[in-house]
Image (cartoon, rainbow over all chains, first blue to last red; front, side):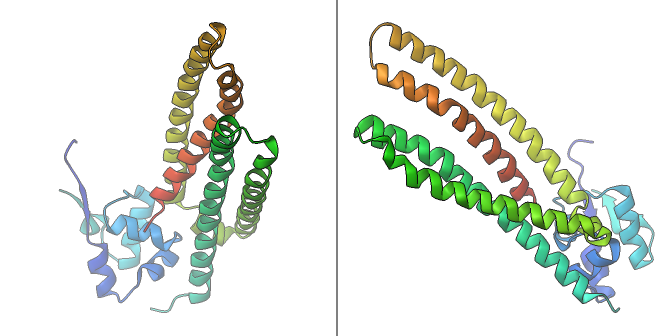
Length: 68
Length: 165
């Protein structure tokens, strides 16, 4: 939908789990830059990557990503 | 949470090396193509110097971009040989960046090709009525390197832009 934006809580969950961007990147098998661009809303991850990130934090994907 | 810091450091290092190789390749390639074109116009076309002035402007950037292209290919080869590294370093952001870069490069190259084709038609018209015949030769010579420089420049430039932090 035009005007809709994907908001994410990755930074919040990273802080809660004491993970750096590099740590999270290594756990889901991507580069740190990819995590950085997702966190900043410049890149929308695939469903697979979103699910992998959610699995690291042990939460449903809807808690990490939502449409605004 | 414990993580494999050696692996993470290796991914970061290879990613930086790969991007810096591309940036250096792009810079030296643009100097090689556009520098040669500028030299043809200014040093040979305007000042009337011999073709020898092109040698350093041609050979040095050529050696540089060849070096960085080989360096980039060697890094890619090393990445491909290790599946875990390949998965991390050729992730979906990298693939998306190359896709956007290829699309931008295609349209830029096509537009440039159309523009220089019309430019050449105009040059032919100028020559046929007996004005500035020297420009005719110069325009023919710069056509391919100019289109190539625009295509390569836009493609790699867009890729590096999308891979920025």
